[in-house]
Image (tube, rainbow, N blue to C red; front, side, top):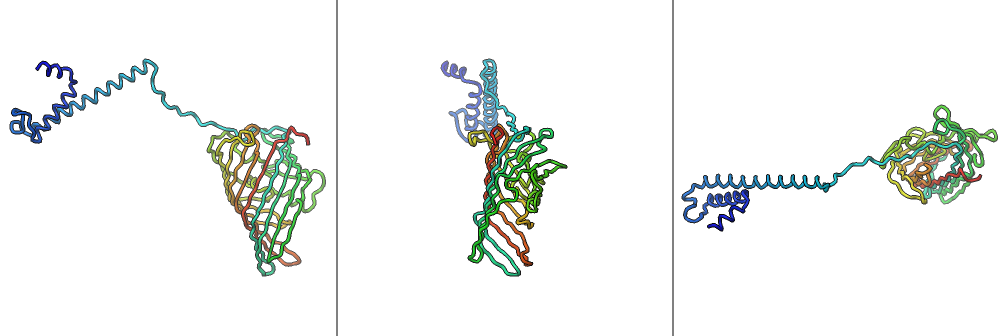
Length: 356
């Protein structure tokens, strides 16, 4: 008996209540504890109620005791400096994609655009023909910042170093090859920002008719397409109005949609670069042999922009393009349409410190 009393005194009260509650529930369903405590002498309903009360009280006391123990443990950790650190949300890192331009900066650009598989359809005097072709344009130029207005260039000097345009067209089994130099190859132009747009003029001589047509083409400073404010990774922005001509230089006008996204930061050509992806669906107006042409371009691209000098290093573009124009030869109107995949590569380098 003494042993039993000693065991009970050492048993926590919540445990005793839980055990007692289980015993009364056992009696309530018809069980029996010896001859003195059974469902015959104790009504099952009373046994059920007593069992539930004892069991509930025991469980509640157990839960309360666990909460007290947890609180005391946390107080001990705070006192000894062993608390678990809470997560902190750091602000997103911001990047500069467009900075102030320095007077005297010189940029050299090389561009190659090609349509390796072109489907050709032509209509001349009511006669329709089809064929295939290959088109490529290779151009390089040098641009120097002459004057600034605030932090942006206002006067540039542009020199066309080379401009080669090649086309091979096969219609009804007969092929024709054409390689031409652009009218402004070797020429130097003054490019001035006036009334919200760039105006180009030939510096050496008076332009001929073909050169006048080329000088009408829109000019886009490569830095203009980037946001002035600092931006985080994932930032997306839309290009508008004259900025659309950035993707296809040498056009008279452009309309449509173009979006750029700052997707990543990578090391490219040994330099830390912002990776800019682009998506575009644009309609252009241009001149082909002094004849107005309609160009529709849908493409996606990627640009690596060096974060140290804020200049594009490499840019690639792939998509689909359709070109349609009309001309009159010997009094007969001819309409031609070319369509096919387009691949473009542009490489830019800062040659400010390099001799001419």
